[in-house]
Length: 98
Image 1 (cartoon, rainbow, N blue to C red):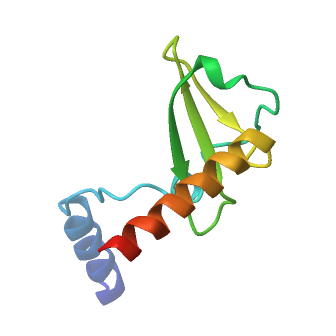
Image 2 (cartoon, helix red, strand yellow):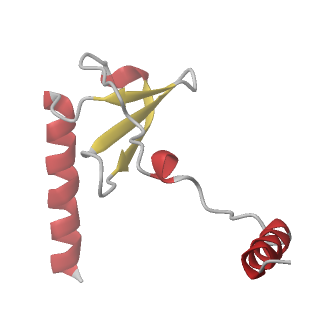
């Protein structure tokens, strides 16, 4: 029997018994959570805000509404910008106090 045929058969036998990879495909890892954003969202219907920053995506803000629905919020909304400024100033004040 030819040596290359034996090598190919041996490789296929080893590859068929190897454990499957548990990592996600690259296309799923690099996908951004927010593909579109809402620009007009009243603060009164928001239960919780989540901020996501990933290397391949822009800054993303996800709002969980009182109806348990999640929507992506445009981070340029005026009230959200003010919220972030207030949160940053509180963090700076708490660092100075310690």
